[in-house]
Image (tube, rainbow over the protein chains, first blue to last red):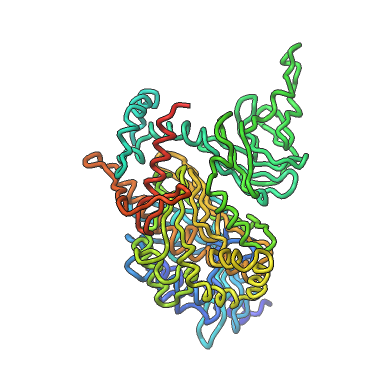
Length: 167
Length: 437
């Protein structure tokens, strides 16, 4: 007989991860930079590779390769009144799905993969951003935090225009 | 949008060109008129030397890239004979593109429309069912992929021209050759590599808007300046210490002739040479790099090169810029849509730590997620929309006209906020556009 406790534990872990990713998506959609930043662990990697998914960021250019310092600078800048490419701000609505817990321990965290579809409206132009995300989550006390987030854009090798909202 | 009849509008465009560019102002139509855009493709991009790529982008036989000279797609390819060429990306039979990807390695290019194939030197090596041409056959030797009529390089930077005749590359590069030297000689071993990938972005605006503008920085990039108030070395802050974009600064705008322009930060950066040394030494291999540069070039030249940081901040007319750590290629697509490709430069002889830092600097400001480029593009798009107005259609470029001066070497120099760069570009534009080939 399948161990019902382990099934329950697995379901609870999946639910916790799902809720975390939904919360992250909502904060990003709302441009709540402080709230979104609070989801990160102290040491972090926020990575959006360019040209391919599997590049070496030490050797190849990325769209974003932020540590905490660079991410804080990024969000600070977006919070000023002069980030013109976000004036007016993008109106955003993102869906997160196909969530898979890979190498994941409910007590400590681990790697999670998901897919996203982001609708962006800015001025009169609607843009779809499609891709896959990989989160490395860590459990600190009762809370899950992001230690790493890697965003693999479907179009990372194609032309990318204004991508200044939080992806 | 209006799709005017080009054949109808072309003569009209020609008649008005001379009226559209005046010493101190330019008519919006220069940036908005599709007929003028078509004429630019012929008279500028169809004529002058246009940058296609760097030798290090195609290091091995078979390596190729697809680039564009105006609207003409070309393949920049390293042939099996070791020779680099620029070939038109169209089958000699019915015109289909023959390169299947934007970049790759290919022994041959096959047009899968009817199965004609070419080797990577452009030679036609096979046609299907040749009996259809009867006794005449196909003259295989003459039906290879068309080569760009002229092709030449300087220090690894390769240019092509679609015109069979005209000034030689070095003549057209003029004073900008020295700025390419600065790029290559940022390396103590005299070698750079354009092998770090790229940012490919675009904006809904005219290609000429990516100017060399020293006046915009403090306003378009006010958000970045706010970041530098928290940390002067954040991002590319170390290359822009002490407000280089205000008139009291030592930085200057220069028109080098031929529409080639630069924002000349050398004196401004030399003032901060000691801080630049400290900055470099923070990274693994930084001290070794400084020492190697002095050994390779002697103290005076090394100081110049280290202060400049491999960044001539130059715009080589019409479509190449070298800004901070990257090569920028501006590709006009339509009168109001422009692609911009930014390729970071890896400096030979630099440590992994410095190489990574230069990439992080680039990403901080440039590309679609950077703190700078998207705001520039936003401004170009606002300009493009604003310029649709036909009432009071003039764009003012008069700033600094009375205070600029001409140096003995022929370049025109102004304070950093002056518009001598834009005037220089428009002067070249008018010269090329007024002369039928």
